Amino acid sequence: MGSLQEFHTKQDEWAGVYRDEVGVVHREKAALLEVAGETRALRVLELGCGGGQVAYAIADRGHWVVAIDLNSRAIEQARRLAAARSDDRMTVILGGFCEVALDGQFDVVSLFDGFGVGEDEDQRRLLLRISDWLAPGGRVLIEVYAPWYWAKVAVTQSLRCYAPDELYRLLEPTGLKAVHIRSGGAYDHNTGIYREQAPLGEAMQYIAALEQI
Image 1: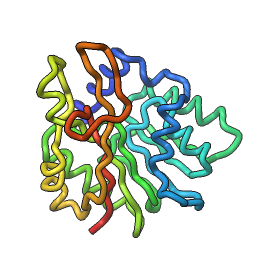
Image 2 (image 1 turned 135 degrees about the vertical axis):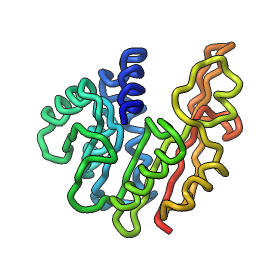
Image 3 (image 1 turned 120 degrees about the vertical axis):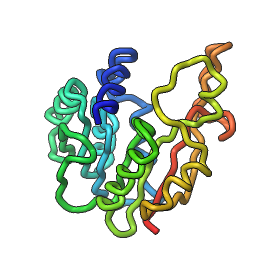
Image 4 (image 1 turned 60 degrees about the vertical axis):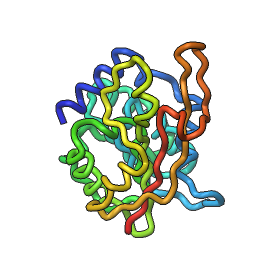
């Protein structure tokens, strides 16, 4: 868990992402948690919540969200956002994913940043924990960095990258299966242009939707 904390600390130092206001990108991620046409309030667990912007946007959509991060600076911002709400739909917890004790199970578990820190066995331990947290019929959304993109750019990548077939093998002992892959965006370092949606073979990352087997 020390390497995970170091990753998020450096990420905040470089980009200051945990101090951003709640914006369009956070609300777009929050919308991904819902199946088309879904109207019920969901119980959501957001792992690696950072500054709490996505969690805040999830709560704005009428869901109940428990947001966890082990970066104390990020959690301070998340707690400020939670305190600014007029409801109790957003709960913020400082702690590590593999140590924190949570009550009940969740309809959705999300990890939009931080998957891939450490070795394959670290990811499997986390995925096993996620499977235990998931309510029957629930789903998981994880953001996975794509090896084909990071292998060709001259940028240091701290997260372990997985192609979809590698992710499928990683999932085999976890009780989870991938049911959908959604391509993410791509940044062209030569032109400085970022495309919000790119073909999977060109994307920087993708979001994998998982369900219990």
